[in-house]
Length: 387
Image (cartoon, rainbow, N blue to C red; front, top):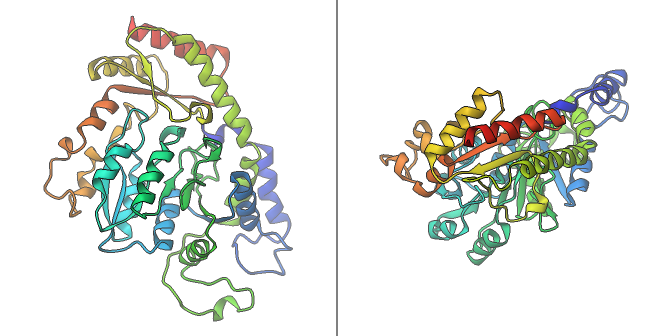
């Protein structure tokens, strides 16, 4: 974590090919000068094949992927969408941009959506459920999908932080009705910026592709300038350059995951058995992407002490504790005060279980390129902080 650690000749050559063969950076049209180079289409096909699903539409950000999935499902004003209170702010931004009302569930010990709290929050207005696979680890998709199916509500997986993560034999993003991915510069694989929405439902795929391109229907029999105006949309298009980088990064993804999992295991082996430390509960530990080590402590005071000690010693933490304000809804008065579900409420008191879990946890970034000395430094830093 992240894929930019491995940017090199492969990405440069992939981009150079575009300029060597016409220099067309727009994904549609220009059939003659582009010399049959359609990198975005190629990237969509390669990524969906990797995931094992039928359809994918590339967009310019992970936020756009979530917004596009909501549009494909017809989510709009008057609807409620349930997601979790621990996620990057973009998940809720996309819901609000759709005109829907965000309803936020507590997390459990996995740091992902608590299925029990999910069921309590469902109303007749609930139009979608968005579990988020935070910090590279899958949510409890069996229980979440059971709840959603019981109420006939579609599930959109926010897998922006978990490309390649596996849940009981399936890649995250392919379990729900739709899945969303991010390829920004700090993600496991990167296009610089970029995202993708995937599905096995062809009608949802077509609506997503139209919405993300101003409503264009992409009928090869109809010129682009003459196709009908069936829906409105936005410009969420991915460029050919982004896709070229994405293809090079995708070829490295399994190696990235293998390295992260190995490095994480080495660090865990070095600190197992230490007093007052436990590890994040994972619904499928074998499928964990491995980019983050989450340690949980008996109380928030000890967690704060450990986090500060690690930061002082130069150990890179990740979100917890240093960027919690961007990832916990209890800090988002600037947005949630405008919603009917949270206006006028004390956000600090809305998710007490989640707040306690998060404040009692410290997350350490697991990099792809880690020497034995790097891992030893992290192990020593944790031992020092606890001593």
